[in-house]
Length: 195
Image (tube, rainbow, N blue to C red):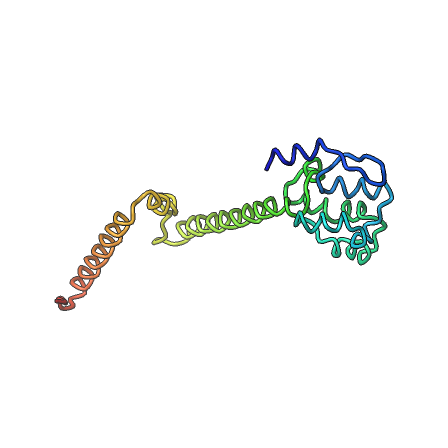
């Protein structure tokens, strides 16, 4: 597919006898079209651009025109500069990179941003757990700070096979059962034998 894009970039298109270089439909092209007098509010009426936006699956042309009208911007460029670019910058896309993208190409950046935020949130949760243990170990005689990282066992388990995980769970269950039996014995309760 990359070869087709490169080939398309080298081609020209003739409109009304005038040759124009073929460009990828991105924010730069939309701004260039506006600079040449193309009104983005009427994008649905421009058959070639309308078809191209739908074919690329990148820009909903009706929505594009409505957004310019609804937000009372004088141009699509103004809407980009006031809404789309600040959003892109907030999710980590540089200004240079932004102008080479279209909405479809921004989606992975957006997903990555939300994934990073979720990971930061989880990290903050675990930090809170460590703080809770630290405060608890100072304020309570029985409180104890963990001797190992809280997620150590979880990460170790990731490398185990399913059978190894099952055996580990079984050993844990037997250990808990033995502890229960010892507690019952210390309390003077009769031993329970399940057969």
